[in-house]
Image (cartoon, rainbow, N blue to C red; front, side, top):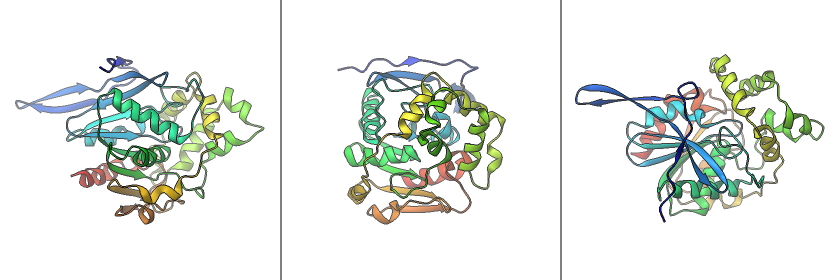
Length: 292
């Protein structure tokens, strides 16, 4: 069966990533458009660029495909880089069935990659994206060639970020579904970063707040935050894919290097939870070296 041809959802004002390449001695610019493709009753929006083996980049909760933008730019020189907006976030928006279990995310992402006719790939994920990535490696081991976990979640003792704590508050849940002040977005971002707090500028706050405020996304975030997530951490030692763990020294609740056989770990001394945005050069260089 032939996959449906992806649609396009892009305008220069909305998003433009310029990928410069050398062609017969001349530099050419290639626009990575945001496209969409139907999966599980959704139109999953994504950006794709570069040439080479496929690498899937999965952002964290409250984020979007822009969370890996600079990392993708660096990796695209040698890889076909795919960045989706996960269901419930960004342009993809809420799931009709409101099912935000991590294993459901993993199944949707597997079908997304099938729709793109990519049977095998490396996958890297930050935070929630890392949780989805290692669940995908467990559930579809023949498809995942390599696994990169960037401050991934999945152990029960992991500290919850402010946004999730807010969305779990039974008194505030109804309010968060309808309204979230920009100041709360800014505070959540500042809490999530380490020493490089200068990245949380007006442009970043405006982008994250605008995408969080898209129709249905605030309510989807509350649904996600209050979803009962089964604890699969006892299964982590069964992961067979070659694994790189990228961890910030001060981020707790991560034992992947201990539990995944043969895993390699690199520790960032002063990073926060959003390493792909805080130090994208470090993240991209580590991934590039690992995938060689």
